[in-house]
Image (cartoon, rainbow, N blue to C red; front, side, top):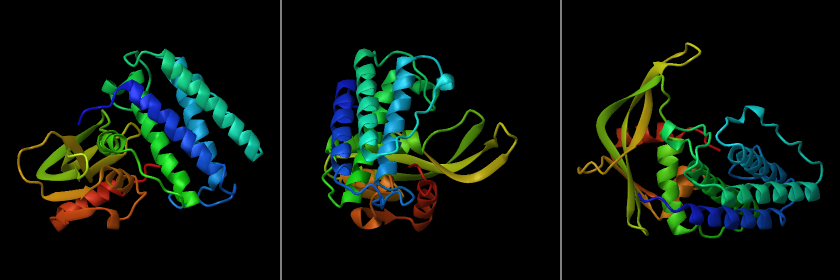
Length: 266
């Protein structure tokens, strides 16, 4: 999977954030978000405001960890929420414009992701998925950009589901699953296995279903999940049901993959 370039990610952050705000302004503040049922429209608006406010701090204070970060206070009215979102968004994209993607910067992810490039990519997908949340709330869903969604399939499987903490170990099995985007001709492969290790607080974990992105292994997958890139991305983020994708293959491998993907990543 070829990553998009930082300028493209930044353009998507702008476009998806603009659509997000446009749609939510047409929703009642207390409209329920069907993909995040604990939230209403204003909660969703405040969530992305806080995310972009936080990552602006990370980029602006790179490479320091965000230990000194102070969360903003949530405004009381819809108009103030909108204004605060715009301020946070403008500051965030301006910081990205001025940053070199190769600059060292903190992230919660793996050692190879400790740079501004991680923020460009992660926040393009954050804005995309929450734009979809806004559209689901308004019942006004529009297509996801195919190239960004295809990259999103790789990103959600590798970064959001595929992380391995330094205290853990992945014990691979011989089975694979392929996530195949029918419109872009791209596939992301995962090898299934189990996770084990002792966490820093002393908790022992073992035999937990796990999977990690791998190159095409050159053998048939035991499980194939296929659909358009947009439908696959939405499905992996729990924003679309099984009716939007085709799932074929071994029932035990499917159960294993579904156990991994059953985790919440809102």
